[in-house]
Length: 395
Image 1 (tube, one colour):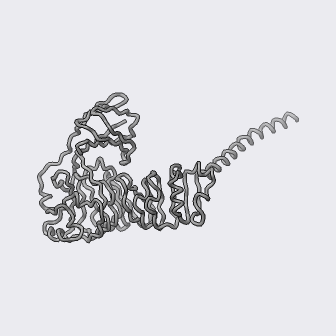
Image 2 (cartoon, one colour):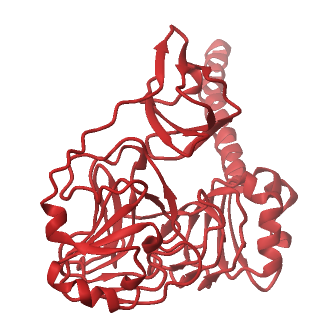
């Protein structure tokens, strides 16, 4: 009898101990989650006072409702952003993110539903649009423009992405709010605004790289261009010509091409200071409309305005230029021999995000494969003479 009781007690221990262990682990995980995922209502009290000391050391995902004060942005810049994977302002009562608010720290930011404006150089990284698409201020440097994305269930906006282009537009596809190259180093045709587009929204291409050898094509349906849509541009020269184009390039060294198929010049809003796209590009329009464009606001700022029909008839061949750098592969590294002095070389992943920059490079340079990212790394070389070259490196 006694032996049976002992056996039952042993069996109960075998059942209870794992159960107690699991409960303890769940409690521990819940406690950890409390420290890493935090939601606060800010505005009445400073954000810093709403977080415990433990949360300030371990926080990964911060959700804010209410609003943020100037001192809250300063607190975030002061070190908290370095800990965060996500700052979620979806339900915050914020319509403007002030200039310089979140500094240069890379972050994933969920924008407020009521957002209207992002101030000059407010932040960098990826931002998810949850409401109307905001007006974007100046990006202080060429690599500080946020990358905009939307979720598939967004009620008002539609996301289009193909091999070369990322584009955010209205559900009826009549307004384009944002467009950029998905992978600019390997864009193999023009950046084309879709047929049926009537409006290019304010700041749509503001602060983007302009690859002068690639065309930007605007459709005949276009009737207006918003403020600063093509302002504060960063021009860049590539040594490899784009191929598979609808139109040939304008054939002038270091001069880009914008093609506008609309016979009536679309209304052009404010341009502002800074680099305007027309400072670096020729404009090609229907021949019958050239004189109209030469006197139209905004369009008359282009370097030259020429006939689209003559551009179509160009017989110049635009085959891809061969790489000038010689690359030798070793088991664990690549040896790169450059034809002339290199200013710097930047490495990008396939989404176009820079993760390494090398300067003061010798004519012969070795790079280890374990530094490269899968499936391949894009190496963008800037030579001291102002020319550029792009190559692909496989780990």
